[in-house]
Length: 322
Image (cartoon, rainbow, N blue to C red; front, side, top):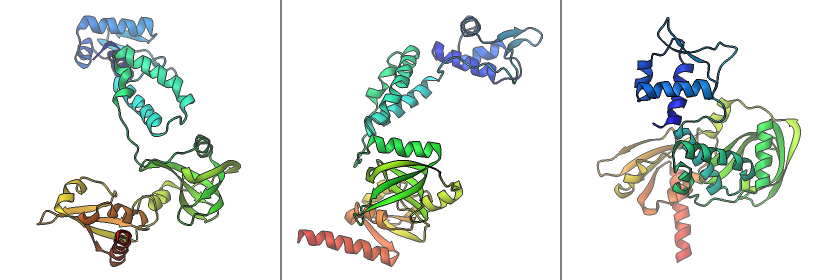
């Protein structure tokens, strides 16, 4: 543990205690010698202005503060692991969505890199040591993201033209934004659609000409959102009306058994080494696409209509090669 992390932890021990902390306790908690503890206390008191003093009557170190005056370390004070996490978040933004909010984040990142380098030499190189690969990511216009995020943050309605993929049509929508979702390398907006009078998801790369409206967004409680967006499989949300039973070959079972397709899935190995997975779903569109990725390594056991859908898609694929 270096000096900066010890100062951070020392502040935490003193601020979080209602009773004095003995020197012996600090030696153990900070994993250092008594002279080091005293130097840290002096730095905390003399250079950082902390209200720390030794209470001789009770035999320990305390902060002289009350509920009205609470001391906090000046500036950005994070542990080294917290700084690493924040820089990793920046890496995600810069790699997955290049330029997204870059101007706003740049000053903060420079400050974080300086702090990390100060505490842990070489730590500022974390961004070069983290690799994130966004497969099949679709480009989102920065102005679209800003408009959506701004309306979401300010609780305003949002109007935009939406280019639907299935029918390839253009429709003007007015929505009440609820939350942004990052799903399979792409951004989606969960919202209450005033045209359809219901909850919908919109892919940000299909949104055009967004306009923030002055009207307040309609509030939808968290339980209702979760019931709609999380009960069934994938981004094509809705209530889970069916359960798909999928049987994977012994070869594919080694991977599928460790995968999470849905938070309420269940699975078990069969005697021959194959793996049977049960997944709740509503709209089967995305589920079918994921099933098809496994080709001959998977069989849809139930329900019958899902089995027929997959069978039809496989036949259509084969027909292209015939």
